[in-house]
Amino acid sequence: MRHRKSSNLSREADFLVVGSGVAGLRAALELSRAGRVLVLTKGHPLQSSSTHAQGGVAVAMSEEDDVTIHLTDTLKAGHGLCRKDAVRVLVEEGPARIQELIRWGAQFDKSGGKFAFAREAAHSRSRILRARGDATGNEMVRVLIAEAIRNKRIQRLDYHFTIDLVVESGRCGGALVLDEHSGKRFILPAKAVVLSTGGAGQLYARTTNPANATGDGMAMALRAGAVLQDMEFIQFHPTALYLPSSPPFLLSEAMRGEGARLRNTKGELFMDRYHPMGALAPRDIVSRAIWAEMAATKARHVYLDVTHLGSHFIKRRFPTIYATCLRYDIDITEEWIPVSPSAHYVMGGAWTDLHGATTVPGLFAAGEVACSGVHGANRLASNSLLEGLVFGARAAGAAMDYAARHAVPSLAAHEAALRSEHLGSVEDVEKIRSSLRRTMWGQVGVIRSGESLIRACAQLSRWAQITAQPFSSRAALEVKNMIQVGQCIAEAALWRENSVGAHYRSDFPQEKRAGWQEHSRLSIDSAFSEKRSRKSQGLLLTLRGRTG
Image (tube, rainbow, N blue to C red):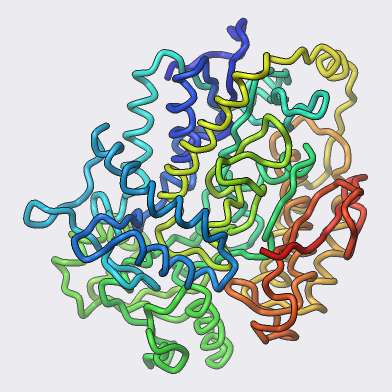
């Protein structure tokens, strides 16, 4: 995977991959079998959410496990809103994808010569593979990058922000890209495009996601005409480090899998009051339990207690977490860790079929940017890295089939329009970004209500009017994307008048209320029958439900 400067771009790529996490890299490796691949990365390639994934990767490979049990656990965690055939693809193809990674050099932790499978919340078996204790995502990305570097058909552009997808004659035929160093904007044509841009955690004031998780791919897909599904389902990780002077830092689900206890600020163990599985209950339940305890004790956090597990075990099992907390003067072998929920994962995204195809011909998606249907209303812990591998490969396979029937399109008209485009600017872009994150956290967070969501929708619409024009800076472009994705989340949450999985409405707490099995579907296609629509950046944002 060679790095190319934008000034040296003289050849067309057969395929564009936008994003370089697990899903994007796996897609690029597959695509290289059929042509030249260009991987576009915003910022540095090691800033993806995949790199930061601690807990591990769930896969049915242990002696006590099988794919049927993994499927059942995933469906249960998804609260009846998973796409069962997509889950079957995930669990059945997952072991082969992991074995492939091992052949390429991935080193997962072992005990007694066998893989050391751990257990996490809502898993009925120990099926979590991990690397270096709590650096699994980093290890997977390392191996995939090394494999891509050896592949002469894969080239990359780092520090290149993808502004928009280019649609010509109803098909996605390339992307508009910003060189973050020079400020130059240019169009890259391709036979097919694979989106793997990750999630949108930065829309919230507290998040475990890296700074570049601003929902760019979801916003681009929407503007290109793709359908977004299940955007109301935002998973909040229950246990992120809470310190006023530091950003949230994820404290892996695996800690509770190994016996960590949750205590309120009075020192009381409380999870048994909320669920029979206690601290190992699904993430949505644990997050709301912590939220309730914080409200009851008038505190901004609770505590995660691992002191009883022993110093040697903690340092060996959670070396990254131990070292990070120590930098903030917390010795987790001796002290309770202050924690509170933080935005962690978007279950929704660009709708895809089982092969990663979106509703826009030529556009494919995989990973967190996509809604493959495997997560339903609440993602089962550690399924996301596996999804990136399985559906990254599948999306690439479908893109290859599509490209075999289509040539690289001529985008001359788009290039001419680009030269005459007037670019605007936004005053106080960082102030808008900060206000948006506080609005989403306070009004569209762990617990929502119709009243809070209406307020959020109104404020987001006002910001959308400010950012309706094209911009020249990455900061302004990110905020524009954040506003549009925030609108999608808030609108879908207002539409879903029931509580299920990660979506909880205090005014509609019933899970089985009529219509609960419908999926929200957002688009800018006014041909859809409308249940509610609003103006968004000059486009008609249409929301409808779909059963199944």
